[in-house]
Length: 150
Image 1 (cartoon, rainbow, N blue to C red):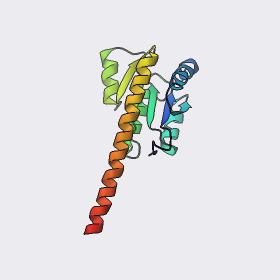
Image 2: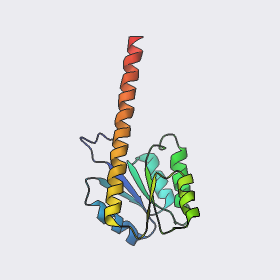
Image 3: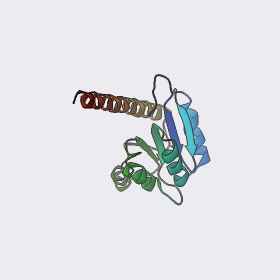
């Protein structure tokens, strides 16, 4: 959990299409965050496990491990379940949207990605993550105080 007063939030961008990956990374330069990238699902899972980001922007259609599966694995791991995920997809069928929601995504964006929509959603998710982390630290602190009083 980063301390946002001293450390920039980290955003992991996952896309097997290098052009899409570079475009999203370029858009994210407009906000104060650190970016990390992965070109596939397995690489993304390793990054999330070893150095958890504050947000994942996840392409859906990738070879080997789909974005749906990556999302499920992140959300099913208690260590990483609270990391917000925004799925980025060219899929627009209701079944695909339902599948994204059922896999645990927190939000989704349609391709082609609109820069301002992306930045707004990223800022909102990072703010939500920051507040959630702050609440978690406060609850831990209060629990320690309560134990000390017993």
